[in-house]
Image 1 (cartoon, rainbow, N blue to C red):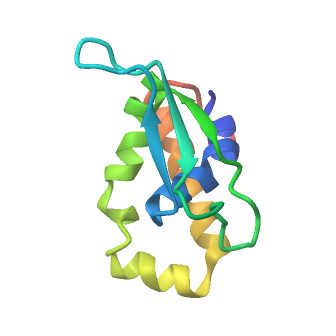
Image 2: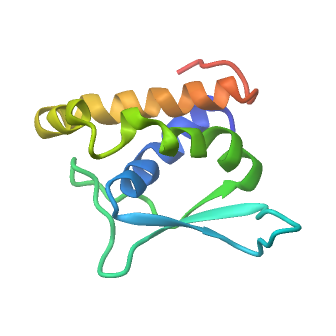
Length: 120
């Protein structure tokens, strides 16, 4: 997946994980062999929704290597932690800005991991 494709395909699913509406499943993984595919699924109890009222597009499949090198760093970044007061304040007033910033961070992470230039 290129950075542009990642931004388009993963912004809402990653948002759903960050807000506790979805989780990642590591299919067929064990200690000797990491998962080749990671599936992002909505948590039980309903379909994940974005703040803009659009469906999040789950389930969503990500290459296991790309998950480890480009998606996981976003999920571990304190900037995107729901306890971050700046993130909380922005999300209260400007969802469009928040999703655009998250999409840009995903694209940059994919670029930093060597999956192409950020051209979005």
